Image 1 (cartoon, one colour):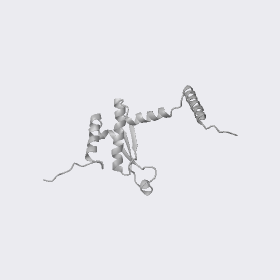
Image 2: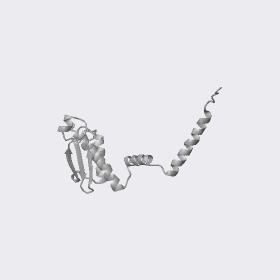
Image 3: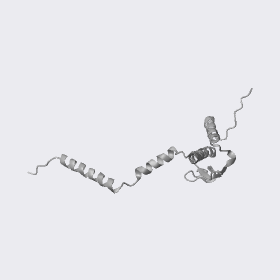
Image 4: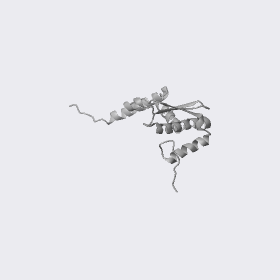
Length: 144
């Protein structure tokens, strides 16, 4: 008896593809609802980039969510990554779930946010006090 492996759609491990399929089933998304286009990537890569349409553009028709992915060099991997990103966005929209990536972006935004006048004043005052302490630590030079 010959062992016949199930035909794989993406060049990833079987477990990863099964997880993707399970997630699609869990969210109630069918392949027929996804419109897929292949476009040329941008960036470094020379002749390969200029000749081959490896980037993938997906549109989920019921929600209108669009995703473009040119992360990997091969079209098959980009198809997988694009679906993964699309599922994250749909899950975020449907379940109002804040993704880890969004939380990280918000954290960075808060860190870069301009300080209020009051906190700026307080910070400068602390720096001045520290500077005075350091001045007192200097060696006394005898000028005689």
